[in-house]
Image (cartoon, rainbow, N blue to C red):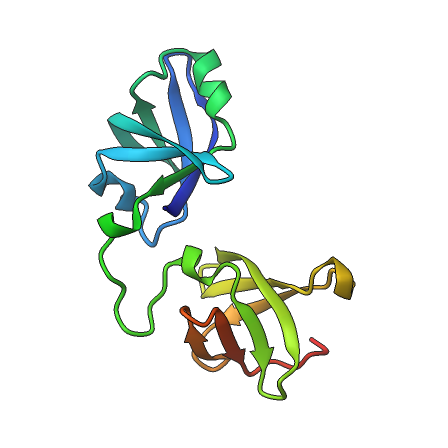
Length: 167
């Protein structure tokens, strides 16, 4: 499964949900008539009955979610689609979910940590890299731009960056 967004809140009293997409464009989830809803790798296939853009979120009506209580039970769950339903990314393009968990090292072979999140700033995407509890739980924000990210190997789960360990 590839996580494409998350449910942030109920919308109204008829079972509609607000969804914050983690996609390049707001309407990317429109391409998928069935979503998988869940978290912690426990997914439930759900048919999309209706979907529209509302301000900076999507609002969606899912089959079986017919009132505010059922919608509230979906809050904080992730929205995913199977990997084989997605188009292959072009060279030097990556799905954010493929970057999560990559080990990040700099050119001096210093391990900076693991990618724990990716977010968009408007100017560029940013990697959240965490050293982990055993190394002080230091969190670094590293821009995901060509000048900084030198190599990504999804299969080897590694990333090489031009980034000082003291940043």
